[in-house]
Length: 299
Image (cartoon, rainbow, N blue to C red):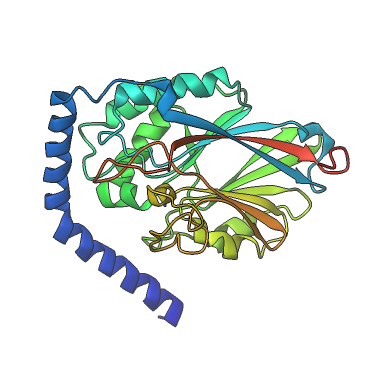
C-alpha cells in the first residue's frame, strides 16, 4: 500500500472512530432540539430568512450557446435540524421561481438521523423544476449518517448524484461539463476518475462539498468554477475578520468568492445549521450563478 492509500485509510479509520464515539450523543441532541423547535413553534417557513446571492462568472472558455446559463446552488440542508420539511419546501419554491437551467446541491442533506427524514427529503427535492437537470454530491455528514440511504433518497427525487463523475450539458455541438467529487473529509474523493472523463476542450464546473479542494480542482485547466459548502460561512461573521471560525477543509476558502489560479471558488453559506441553531451576521443562502461568455460581456 502506497503512502497516499495509507493516509486515506487512516482518515477513514479516524472518521469511523469519530462516528461511533459521537453518534449517539449527537443523535440524542438532535432529537432534543427537534422537540424544542416544535414546542417553541420555530418550524414555520419565512422567506425573509433566506437571501438570494447573485454570482456572475465570465469566462472566455464558455461557448456562446451557454451565455446566460443559470445555475442555482443550495447546500448544507441538514434536514431535521433547524431546517424542517416546511422550510425546505419553501426554499424549493424560491428556487423554482428563479427558473434555473440547472440546480446543484453540494452535500450534507442529513445529520445523524436518516430514517426519520429520507422520505421528506425525497418529497421536497422531487418538486425542483430546473429546465435541464438537478445534480448533487454528498457531504461528510451524509457519510456519517447513511450514504446509501441518502443516495436512494436523491435518486428517487430525480436528482443525479455525481460520485467522482461528470455530467455533460450540450447545446448543439458545444458542451458544459459539471463534475462532482465525493466527500473529501471522509476520503472518498477521487479526482483521477474525474480527470479520466474530462474533455479538455470544453469548460467545466466542479461540485465539491469541501471548498479547500479548490486547490486540486484549479490544477485542471477546463475548470472555470468550483461550487462548495461545508463551512456554513462559519455561522457567524465579523466585520474585518469575516469568518473567525474555520475548520477542516474550509480553512482557506470559508465563505464567498476567491480567485484560485484561473478558476473561481465560491463557498455558499448553506440553508441549514448543524447541532446548534444560531447565526450571527451570516445569512441562510441560495446562490444564483449566471454564466457569461467573456468576449461578449466584458464586465
